[in-house]
Image (cartoon, rainbow, N blue to C red; front, side):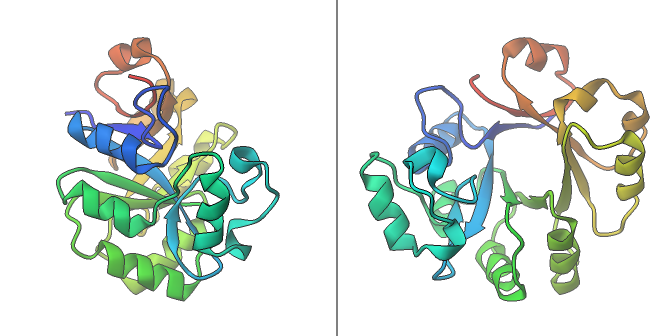
Length: 214
């Protein structure tokens, strides 16, 4: 059966991305979610997509150089709360699938913290566009469901080559690859992002989709 995840918790346009209300709605509707992870200056794992606060909060500050409390003090002006990963894990109640995408390059300590926070989860995967993250976390714990992400400009041959790596358990790729028959031969699970209309969902009902605006 195909697996359907909601991109950044955006099941509907009214929600703010990577926020607890958005996640709760997805869980209520029995959907899993895909979310993004960064580390703050004070080493908090947070659910946030961008490397800086400029797009969401008009403030040119890097996440890695800003403390968690300061980030949410800035976000409060926009009626926006950025949650820690542990808050997401708590509301998921270990019943809903979480695809956790590491955005920045994590240190060994960051990865150990991530492993610790997710150790009781049953339904989750850890993914990244940065292969080094996946390789390093595999070196710390080999039985995790780890995935490598690919953009729309990645050559098909490269995806096929990377799929053979022992630490790559799943593949996450742009939706343009939905019609690439060479990739259908890969036996590992494949996820496609970001589907934004119900036509795609209906047409590719047998594929694992990362979706928005159901």
